Length: 116
View 1: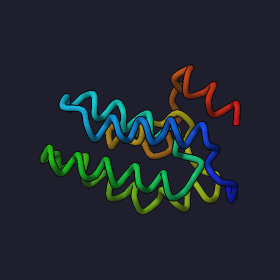
View 2 (view 1 turned 30 degrees about the vertical axis):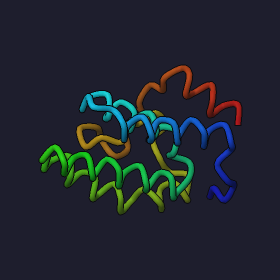
View 3 (view 1 turned 135 degrees about the horizontal axis):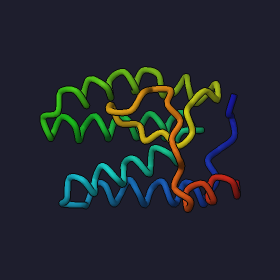
View 4 (view 1 turned 180 degrees about the vertical axis):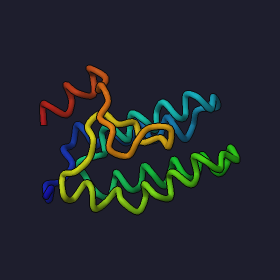
């Protein structure tokens, strides 16, 4: 179970990705930033859940019912999964990806997470 706080370097990268998702005008870029923030947030319950809430908000704004429904499910399981250390590394958090499917992690994010 993870009870350690999010390291400063990871938190800064997570917040930068979340901020970039909010200010981007390109819908695909917004999703890419949220996906990267998701990968960074997985080990920590609250940031992980907050990321899925942001994904739900974007899905609703885009009127994407499938994505919105998938995010509701993910919001329910995000905190317990993170707290128990049961999350698929590299998973982007989108509804088009299985809940338990590990994915290749971008090299820069892997390096950042390994350094913590």
